[in-house]
Amino acid sequence: MNKRELILQATLELITENGFHATPMSMISKKAKVAAGTIYHHFENKEVLLEALYSESKEKMGKSMQAAELSGNSFEEDFKSIWTALFTFYANNRLRFQFLEQYAQSPFIQKETKEEQRKHYQPIINFLQQGIEYGHMSAIDVEVMTEMVHGTVVSAAKIFHSVGNLNKSTVSDLANFAWKAVKK
Image 1: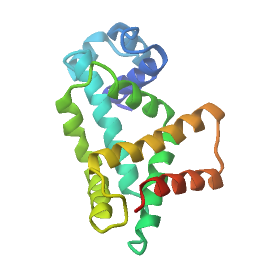
Image 2: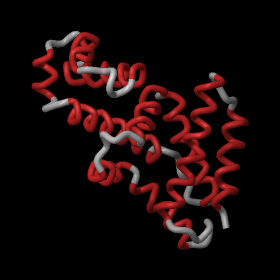
Image 3: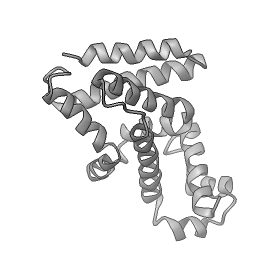
């Protein structure tokens, strides 16, 4: 890992463990094993560092959803594949999941930052919009639909992280539950 990556990884670990306010730059510097000046070489301040970590996390999240195997034959199956891909990302990346949840609800996040990072999952929003337009899904606002679907994934990931594992059958049942909630 290069120094920038070490700083981001240390920040991810410390923020999820201690929270935003209890994680000063000096602690990040120590955990990353870099000089404080090195952090400021890469990031102007803590807010910029947090935005970079958020952006990187959103990008990885978006790539995982876009990597879902879509057949194009069944909208329902494609929906479940995307849902499962996001769940798998959250299940396999507990710290990123926790950070994304914390940061999205924090006063640190700027509206512009949220809007900018939307580009990483815009294809999924477009997919949901098509589902609404083609009559596969309930005719509600796509923004509301996106939040509702994401909420089912977040809930499943929280269950996964609290119990330690969910078998494939249960994950499939949860994806089916999410589908039933939005289908027309």
